[in-house]
Image (tube, one colour):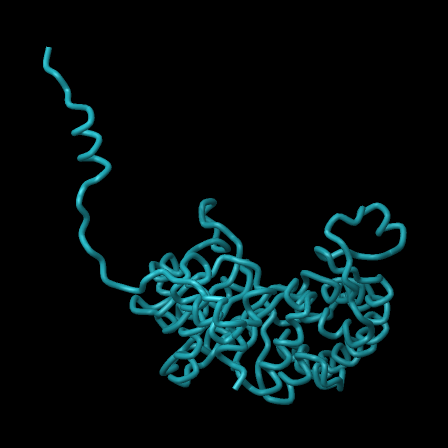
Length: 329
């Protein structure tokens, strides 16, 4: 029987020579140098994992701005529920972005916060106890139902005005026009959409019925069954807004309708030039929510040479850092 040199085989498999690689050496921040937050963030580029993805996202956003790209910012409603609302307000106030896309909750909760604060709660708070107190939970954020009642008192007379105008002109209002009007009427500098309206930044909401705002429209339809909102016109306007651009960049926080609407609009342009995603969705179920930038390239939503990155993580932590490093100048 042939004798096998097990040690030799093991050594050949484990201790085989490798090719030398060139590139960024993995190194983290050295706290022996003290605490320097700017240097800590710079160290992300050589840290690896999602830290390096965040570093790449910062560089891509800088390139968007340097190239004077038209910047499309998308965020899901839970982002406005959180303290990210103040960061979106900053971006709108200082005209750092050119187009905003969000869902109904991302609209109404900005206005609702003008009537009363949201309160830090607990992820584990029992739903049955909160229901008895008429307190709604968004993760670990509590929203007393009184906030929605105040919102209803404010918006219903405005919907009545829009309805009378529709009867007079025969033309339905679009979601973006509705948001613009509400932004002007709230007259509150803490509002994202006050500044968006003032600075001429269009705000699109493809899922206008998905939230408290949709509830108000639902109840209003019982009084005026012929009241209408023209979502199709806004879809056309969003798609048209990408065509003919010299450079285009997208920043998308979260996923779902917001992500798909922005990317699908870029299909008509043959893709965006820059893309940054921040979300926690996975691609394994085939959803657009978890799809990577490379999948969007296959559809023509991002250009083949698009500079892109997906940062997997919580936008409430990551986005303030990205803004600090790429927008706050």
